[in-house]
Length: 445
Image (cartoon, rainbow, N blue to C red; front, side, top):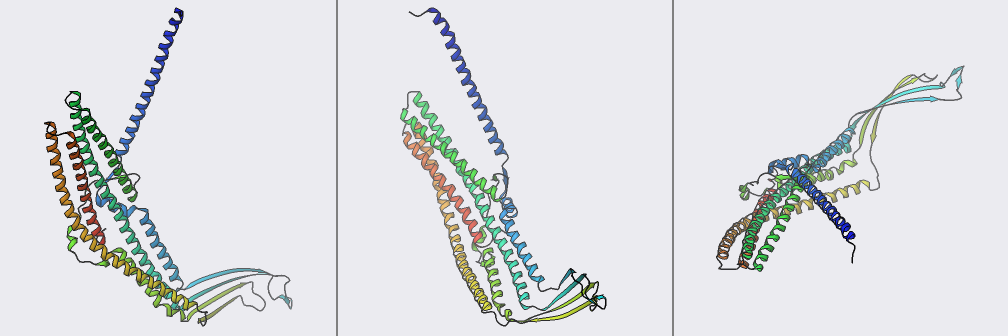
């Protein structure tokens, strides 16, 4: 038999232990709640700070602030700097030198130093190129490279603008997918509540309740996936417009449908203009190859000041000369350079021909894509309306006891899938019109 005093002591101890555990659990719960509230508050704050741009604002911001555009602009500055360097080789130049000479021993004649022990010489030369065919040719070639760099920057702007437009359209499509998933979830929740009420009231079965609950939880997962897709598209657009965070779409762009009947003009495309500029520059380099065999003429004027002057030397003097240079033999260097230039020209020609063929194909495909996606979008919208009508009829029949919830769930899934296809079809129409504008060289303006 146990001692009563033991029972008396263990009772309060157990009570204190239980109380202590309860306090610890409560504190943990409060800490988790506070942390959860803080996370939600941070999430709400971050959601409130998302910038919203219209379609045109996003495109303008992308082509003006994207670092890739800055790199292309730096390429233009580099080409202009090279042009300045090449131009200077055909212009006059002035150089000056200052020399101090100390000699030992000093040579004398009749008691006078022929050359002083310490003597300074200040000399200068003015060089004026009179005939420099190679330098003149290089100057024109450098000017062509400036134009090529400008066309490169234009093509880079086009690429950045297209990427920003696609990200913008991805946000719109993802947002519509989220809306229809939320609507499907709400419908599934209502169906689950009704099935659960019937089960709790002893009218319905537990199987029907679990089926409805399974559909509801599956729709919840789809909602989360759609939200993540929106966030990824927003982050992608934020990177393209050089923003500090994600960027949201504020409107739905309306693309000009009249371009579908416009004629094909490949010269409006920046990539074709870039290849055309590269081909013209390569042709100039090839056509200037004969100038490598021409002579060059330059005039040089060199004044000189010596202090102190020597015994047989003047303190001031000048010299003028004309330099005539003729390249006679170079062991095949100029012939090899000419062959290389022809090879580069052929490469650019083939690249341009392939690009023009590809551009023509893109235009034909884009025109057909616009017509096909518009027909498909019209059909899918009609199918979505029909599927929603089936859901309504099936739900009424189930509530009246005429069908089971299997028909309701199947109708809801089909309606959700059909609406998703309709959203995808609408997005395909917008993307097809954008691709047609890009293919015709009408985007960006």
